[in-house]
Each structure stands twice: as structure tokens, then as C-alpha cells.
Image 1 (spheres, rainbow, N blue to C red):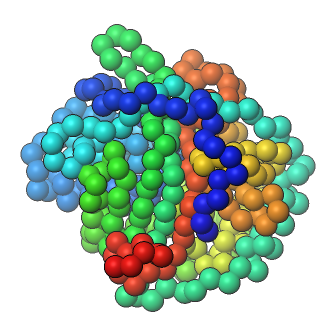
Image 2 (cartoon, one colour):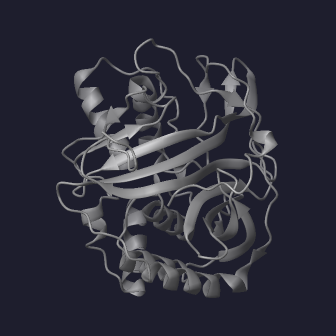
Length: 349
């Protein structure tokens, strides 16, 4: 899918340019997981070959909803110390910050979720996508940004990360890959190769059941094994399905089954209007996290029901975020199968 923004980026997303100082950066409550397994592989390799990491600072690649607190803290320090906030060699960070991202909170319809997901599932099942050979790579391009509390000394303010590009290449078996995300990696990116395959790998997704009931049972089983006990079980399952829909390449039959499975998660609603990271309006399937007051929204084209992206919105004010704060947003701009690592579709080598 190529991005075709229907409108400019919202005015409130204009960032103040500058470098992040040495600060305590709290983990964005709605920050998308973006395949924590990929980061864990890199972290383990870094810990094996580098000096001890500094005191933990949260990691923009990890979503709190599915991690145990101790693991999240340990991984956060390792990634920030080893790779996530460097610019590739000069020791400076390059994540600009600006005012908090905000939006109008769309109206939720509990009865509308099931019929909407049925339409989305039918559209996904009708999609014809090529398979992935073992010598190929899944390529996914996106635009991402987040809002988080930043503490300098004794002062904490809510700031936004600059909307930026992200490119990921994944081998089908999940043991090889590459990530380029300016600000979080150097300009040339980092390897995602490692002995442990990431869970979103195409080969693994292809083995999951396509019966919605069996699939949902497996989702609950796997999310229960890693979720923070304070996160509601149904919310963790909803987040887990969203992770399989976003930065991955699930077969069409599985995608359709994931939507049908999501319809049976308690608390799932339809939202009449939602906007992705590049300004495209759509309808959304969403669920409110009762603990944080944030709503995770999967955004779809209103006409074709194509998946556009995901965002997390504060719908109930908290001690940290005002109502309408967008704590995380991602727009998927391209999915493709390519023959080489770092190959970009449409560009000559």
C-alpha cells in the first residue's frame, strides 16, 4: 500500500528541532511493540559484545501492554544504551521533541464492532498477495511518532517524538532482518539477525490456525505468558492481534481470521472517525485499556477497509496525559516482498 495522505499533517504535530539531552524518558504507555523479539535479538548480541549498559531508560520499541515490568525495564536500558537513541557514531541523539500530539476523540459504538469486523474480514480474505520464498524478504515501510513524559532534573513535561520514517526487512524464518529508523538507529540502520526468530515472522504466522475460535485461544495463551499482570487480559489479547496486523505480512486467510477473532474479545468497539500518522481518515476498531484510560485503534479505509495504521489515544484523562493525547501513531505506507536485504520497491539497486 502506498501512502496517499488526504490532508497535511495536523498543525499540532510541528516539532521543535533539537537533540534529546540525557534525561529519564518514561515508556510511552501506548507505544507499539514493533516486534520486541527483533530488539531482544539485537540486545542479547550487544550485551555479549559490549561493556555494561547504563542505568535503564525506557525503549521506544517496546509496548508496556505485553511485557513483564522487570523485562521491560532491563530491555529498555540495554537498547537505549546500545542502539536505540544514537545517530550512528558521534554519540548524539537525534529524536526531536515538540508539543504533545493531540486529536479529537471519535465516538465509540459497541454494537458496531462485529459488523465492521465482518466487512473488514471479508475484504482481507478477498485480497490476493504473493507468498514469500525462503530467499526473499518482507519489506514494510511506515511513518511513526509518539508522545511521552520527559523528565529533566525535577521537571517533567509531555513532549512528542518527531514523525519519522521506519523501514524493516524480515526474512521469512525470522532469523534475519534489517531496521532503518532515523533517530532510533544510525542512517544505515541496524541488523536484526539472530538465532531466535521473531514471533511475527512470515513462516510462523503461516502456521497459525485460521479457525477464528482456535486462533483466539492461541492468542490468549501466548499473550498471557508475557503480559504485565496489571494489564487486563482482554486488552493484552487485542494488542497482540494488532501486533500481528501491523509490522508483519500475514497470509490473507490468517488476516481474515484475526479480524473475526478480534470480534469475540470483550470490550471491542467501532469508532466513527480516526486519523493515521500521515493524516488519512478512516473508521477504526478499538478497545479501551481500563487501567491506563488509553484506547488502541486499528484504522481502516472507509471504502475499501484496507488497513491504514494504528494509534493509541488517551480517552480518559490521566495524571500524565490529557484527554485526546495521541501517545503513539503509525501509518503503514508500503508492504512488499523483495529479493534482497535493504531493497526498496520501486527503486533501482
